[in-house]
Structure formats: C-alpha cells, structure tokens
Image (cartoon, rainbow, N blue to C red; front, side, top):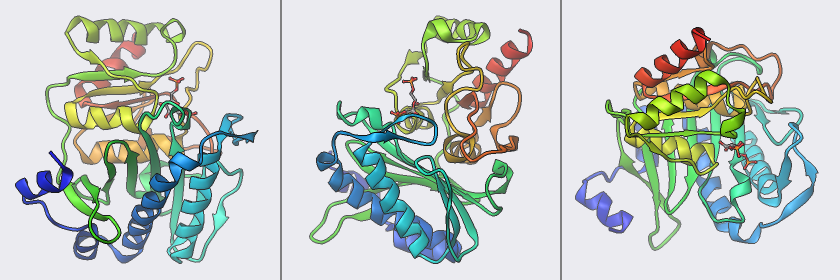
Amino acid sequence: MPVGAYLRVNKLLTSLDEHLRAHVPDNLSSLISTIAAASIDIRRTLPTSLGMTAGVNTSGEKQARADVYANEKFATSLIGTGKAAEVASEEMADALQGEGSIHVAMDPLDGSSNISTNNPLGSIFGFYSSKLPCSGEHLVGAAYVTYGPMLTLTFATDGPVQTFAAVEGDGAPVFTLLEDNIHIPLRPEVFGLGGQRKDWIEPVERFVETLEGRGMKLRYGGTFVGDYNQVLRYGGIFGYPALKSKPKGKLRILYEAAPMAYITAHADGASSDGTQDILTLRPSTLAQPTPLYLGSESLVREVEALIARR
Ligand code: AFP
C-alpha cells in the first residue's frame, strides 16, 4: 500500500510542522525540522554521491563521499538555525561552534559501507543540554532518520516516540505522522549483533545461543539504524558487543549509543554496556566507543546477568 494510502487508512495525518508547533519546545523544534529538510536533500543526493574519499574519519574508518556530504549538509544547516551551541560529528575532529543552547552530537550517515549495496542507511542525532562530551543524562531529545524504502524521521523529546514519513505530493515532500507513541512490543522476535561470532566475548556467544534456542529470528544488515529500527518495531535486541579484539566495542557513546538509548528508554526498552545503563556513561572524549546492548528490557537484563557471572 502506498504510504499516503496507509496514512489515510490510519487517519494519522498530522504534519511534522503541526506536531512540532504543538508539542516541542522552540529550540528543539527548529533543529528537528532542519534535520527533516536536510534529510530530503541527502536522500536525493545519495545516488550521485557514490564512491570513497581519500581520507578517514576521526576513528580511522574509511569515509564515503556521501559521509562528507551529509556531514556538511547537517552541520551547516543545524548551526544556521541559531539554536545549536555546538555540533559535534563522527566525521569531524572538533565540534563546530554556534550561538544557541543545544549541544548536538551526530552520526550524519550511519552505515555508509551499505551505499554500494543499496541497503538502508541512517542518520543519528543527540540533543544535549550540556557541553560535550557529557553523559546521556543530559539528553533532552534524540532523533534518527532512515533512508530505506521510506524516508522516515523517528524522535523523542521527553515524551512518546514518534515516526514521521516523507510523503511525496505536488510540492516538496511533507513529513506526516506514521506512528505515534511507539513502544517496544513485550514479546521479542528479532535480534542482531555486530562483529564476528568468533570474536564475541563468551557470555554474548552463550546469550545468542539461547535466543536462537527460543526461536528468535536473526536480523542483521550492518546499519545500526536499520537493525535497531526492527527491534523497536518487533521487540528484541540489537548489540554491538565487547569483542575479544575490541573490548570497548565499536559504536560511539555520544553520536550513536546514547541517542538511541534515549529513544529506547522512551519506548519502554532498556540499554546497557553490559554492566550499566548507556545513559549513565560519561565519555571523556567525543568519539569514545562503548559495547552496546539495546532493546527489550528483559533481554538487556539477561545479557547483563550473563556478563556479570563471567
Ligand atoms: P559504516 O558506517 O562504516 O558502514 O559502519 C556502520 C556501523 O558503525 C554501524 O552502523 C553498524 O551497526 C556497524 O558499523 C556494523 O559493523 P560490523 O560490520 O562490524 O558488524
């Protein structure tokens, strides 16, 4: 069914702008609508930004041309709102400084190694009330974009989690409410863990065997946003665990782990680095990574218990 028809059937016709005006404080509202507008441009540009740059990002990872484009587009648009105090990004060594009050941390294009295979990509944003780096306890909102069959924007700002989808019309696409008040389903169905199985720490390997034993389905595509998005809808767990070769994990606290942990907490789920809530971690650098387990609370507690018994 086309998105427009789906939206009509579900009578969910609120536009993003209407929603932001009614429910979201002015500074966050400007940042979120700017992200929505920039994501439309990035989606259009993706087919023409294939290929890699000669450089690497701050974590030494290869950079796609689309990483650089998305970074510049989001960073300059967010600073241009006048609402951001700074914008820090996985693709920049230092944060850009602005005139506003919200400290933004972002992964402008998550999963860029999926560009050449045309699998889903994403963008992740954390809105912090304190200078970065700081813990996720200072988050006042978080958002992520999915560039999949639909262009969607999911966010929470101290309230329910909502997803808006870009609906094509006569003019520019309009983000329209697709799903309101999202809660992770009680019965978990899917799981996805990054890294290689032989590199997982032993409790994680045992944990995954129990998930398989109870008939849960493996869903892993290699883009955090895409894989997490399934957990939010179907219930289950996403992890990028501590690896034997990489005990601190891969995903970054400020740019990726804490914003998604914030959304998860507002959808009745839980997050952990194996011992403590992701939102309580205090990174000392902008790009500090963490092991990450995220999703249905019962499963996050199970993996924590196995790690504690190690
Ligand atoms: P890229 O942006 O380099 O594609 O990395 C994506 C990512 O950071 C995250 O989106 C995935 O969950 C994770 O890496 C996948 O990593 P593995 O390939 O090691 O499973």
